[in-house]
Amino acid sequence: MNKYKNGLKIREAVIGKEASRMVSDSLSEIAPLLDKKTLLVFDEAVARGILDMKQREMITITTLLTQGDTVSQLRIHIQAALNVGMTRDEIVETMIHCLSYVGFPKVLNAIAIAKEIFNQYDD
Image (cartoon, rainbow, N blue to C red; front, side, top):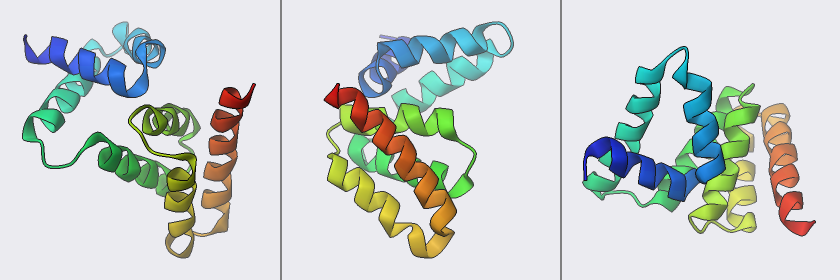
């Protein structure tokens, strides 16, 4: 299997087929190369085998949270974290751990997004 197809398979497993399709659709007209590069990132991450996907999603959530103004990406990656086996408590604890480093506003915003994603499962 080539790296792009493998990357797509991994990305779909991690963020879900719908989110993966949304990423491709949003980039296809303006930056198709960027979509391909994201596929390579997934393929290469798994090929290296050093961090598992739970660890990678924890890092991704933390990075997005610290940047602020990353709502759409946080939605995708909170869902991805759940998809790869992180619990709600682990996701929330990851965000709480960031409080001392990035402050209340960014953590509260991230928690609100997490609540939104978690509520989708409760409906």
